[in-house]
Length: 121
Length: 109
Image 1: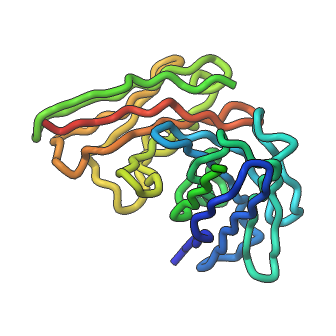
Image 2: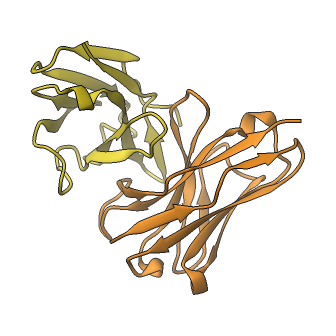
């Protein structure tokens, strides 16, 4: 069965960086794009963008350019979210999410469990 | 890209039906039949409940249904049950982007 397993919670100081991982199993990794979604404490879901797992080409939503980088290690079926120059407002749960099928668009049928990133001095 | 507009909260009694609206624009909800709905319980990942406007993934109860009229999509839950109490988010394709609604807290009285 499809599973997305994310790395554990992180506590970082402002200005530091963090790398969140999302390990996929149960399907051919390179055949489905991987999306990233942010949820600040008590707030709603915010789509951050996606990465083409076949080509490695990332697409970032408005507001997630510059300090946010999506990457892959296809040898271990893992997607990564790297955030640099962390700010307090980056404190959130970050989810990876995969499409339901190869043809559905903007339909996230599978989610990781979420990774809490806390930025505090 | 602005978030889709949802009511902050709705409530209903067990057995009743409720509807959650999701208003977008002609650039997102109105242009595509690609609205999805997610249920999220506290501390959990979102769960897909409806996609492409009115389709249910395998395993989702037929008490959940979706519809769309113009720039507004709707999620209806019939026969409310206690376990339906959760946050609900709509989501739409918007060209090169994806946009979520602000979320609606459903309380089962």
